[in-house]
Length: 427
Image (cartoon, rainbow, N blue to C red):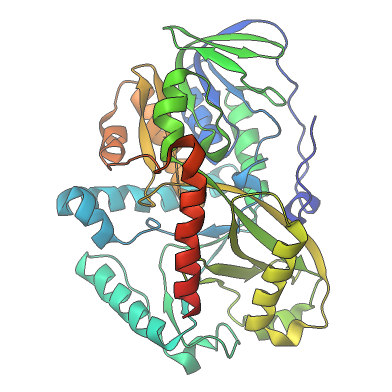
């Protein structure tokens, strides 16, 4: 079984018994492809509805973004309600934000119901790190209020530094329904819950190809899986399994690299002095930084963006510089872990739900908001497969288009666009 990418999360993971790879040919009602939050959630929901469900994961459950992310639970979407209103109108915006609220409540319910030990904690701050961003936070608070969204306190520099003791911070906004958890342990807990519900789980089982059918037939190194329905939950790691997936689904999501580091333990008093309320936090730069404290009093600090795996040492140095820009007093503290991975983003930064065929559904492109929204995706995939597709179709009404440039030029085009946003953040 392939190992997890080295990280503080992998080193602090709960005990878990890996599933064996698939050997032989099998049949099932539903095949779920992908063992991250969305796939595990879909499989759990389907099994609880009585479907004979198989989930295959190319590596290990939670191997991708679900086991490496910042561990930040952020309510809503990556863009605010006004941006969604411009795409779909006010009535649908209100409905979709209701679904996003359900996603957060579902996460909390599952942690409690299945006793998942994942260090769940509530409290989240958006931070202004430039004077102009103080006004942007105020405008965002007014936007949320105009759309009937809960709005937390808006802090000035003095007040926000009671939460984040950094001279770089100029203001902050409390975001309700948001918090933090240990992402890999949450994934492992969902996997155990799915297996307990009857899901047949196979790790180390990549899908190398698929015949759409119906029924669909997925080809793996160890055998074939014949399924009446397929739920595609590979997100940034989904391969082009059929011509339709390669041409219609994959161009609408871009795998984007981001990075994290963990310091050596700071000790309780020093850690609490940095972040007295121990809430998760993120700035509002386009290329943002996000950070929080671990239960063993490390600073977990993330950010940056990359479109290749090259120059890993350069990314580590750049992220360390960003951390010290916030907390220069940590210049004597060693970095114990550094890791990265891909998230799936869409052009408009809203999730992409849809169908490849009537019996093949997908959800992808959570754009950095996936800790909560992926659980909702799993539930809506299960509802649609079970014959009640109304809420899935609401999400599918968000319009999406492929990244420009085709397979050859879309990555260079995105790099140039991100360079512009980096310059905007700096200026």
